Length: 376
Ligand code: GLU
Image (cartoon, rainbow, N blue to C red):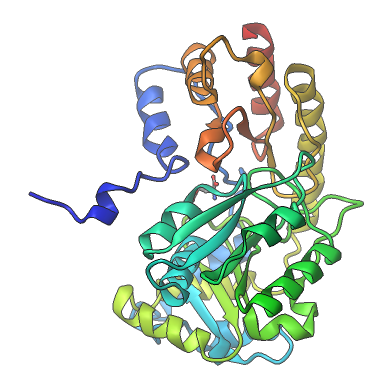
């Protein structure tokens, strides 16, 4: 039977594809070290698990408002000066938040600017909304190329997606970058979509800038956040959008037909994770150690820019490629021959690179680099 063209033309997420692939390899006896999927190795904090179990016991197992449980929306809105609970929409992870945003702001033929490398689902999600993804390469240091972004703007531009700290590069953008983007967005009448999934993962001396502080951009700023990384809740699937004006209501309207509310008791787990997150201090210290170690190891093998946030390295592997070999082939060869799984740069719109997730145990990281060194 025939399928819709938009699905025929889209490929499955190359990051989530690793989950069944690695399971299969393990079942077949390969000793796999997973530096592919971006998921912190930490256990979900006990307070979150207890609150979720309690919510189940208390009977929060039924439908709720499509936009989310009121107590959670109120708590989340408190972080955004000028917004109320009605400006928050709780979504199935940041992934659904972004999907719904493109569905809500794009008409066919509209354009969304994506600085690349960028997270694997942006391009597919923009296209599934009938819009065009306009890729703009970042600078060699992984910061945004503002002149190139300005050149990419057209009358059809509806939004630019800014992801800081960045997946896959680990770059963190300074205040000036957001201020410049805000000016471009205002002058050319488009949205700034800020994907802040990694906002809590920034290593000293770097600091994440919160674009909500730029008061004059709030009417066109759409913020996306998630509990997946911040509270090791990847399986809960709880993220959210914060936006001024009518946008949250429009998103909620879409959600009322799409999935209704996010799992009710998972939202109560998220409520326990909102605000103070005492576990983050220890996690960040551990991740910073892994970041330094992984960066030192990676620079000995590849060309690598030091990451400032998130939990990825995105080295340029071109000097390691055999003649005619792509970074995809290279990553697959390493997986087959060493068991070390990494995501090829093609997935992020930037061939010639691989993404290494260092949010794994120190032992896994050491073993992975030992295998890579031996093989290379
Ligand atoms: N965001 C994570 C990653 O990039 C999780 C997988 C996904 O949803 O793409 O690996």
